[in-house]
Amino acid sequence: MCDWAALLLKSLDKTRDMPESRYFQLATVDEDGLPHNRTVVCRGFDEQQSVLWVVTDTRNKKIAELQASPHAAVCWYFAKTREQYRMAVRCRVDTPDTDESLCEQHWQRLSVAARQQFLWGEPGSERTAPKKSLIDHGANTDVLPDHFCVLTLLVESVDYLNLRGNPQQRQFFEKQQGQWHSKALIP
Ligand SMILES: Cc1cc2nc3c(=O)[nH]c(=O)nc-3n(C[C@H](O)[C@H](O)[C@H](O)COP(=O)(O)O)c2cc1C
Image 1 (tube, rainbow, N blue to C red):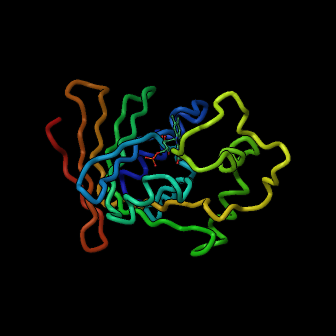
Image 2 (image 1 turned 120 degrees about the vertical axis):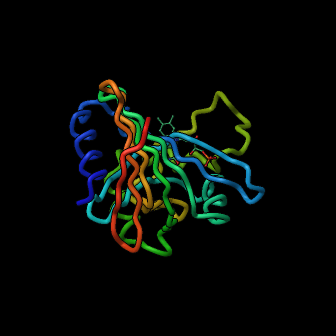
């Protein structure tokens, strides 16, 4: 396991009782080169493969942006441990069409309330009857919707900053020819 992955595992472990420590920001660029950023939930981390997983809906804008450019940036701050991870990632988008087993696995792990969010209708479209509940209690949440998708974020570099200590610690990790290299940076 590379050093940054060991650091991230430790941050996740120290904050395991804080659901908000699973949220990070994922920034993409659209076809005009304009940036877009949003919060997402980390649904898994494989320290051996250096990948993170996120679940989303194919109808969201980030999917079109990732199809235009698979390069994205993650910014993840752990308030309890005062550590920031900024990652350059390459994103793979999988739908039930391209990898049914991966999508099914992530769908099964979601709570019923989280699955219902995928059945509210087209994300970002106008809500014409704002007072009407979007929750369809009769909807079958066992069935994997076609628009459910899993993003696999392959980490290519990590800029790690730990605010604890004086001086603070900053370390840059980069994968070159299959090997991780790191260097200390002035914060
Ligand atoms: C705490 C929090 C967690 C979120 N988690 C996710 C997530 O895991 N996946 C997701 O697609 N959107 C998630 N969202 C919503 C996104 O931030 C965003 O509003 C939505 O995905 C639409 O973004 P887009 O139009 O840029 O694709 C979350 C929002 C918040 C505030």
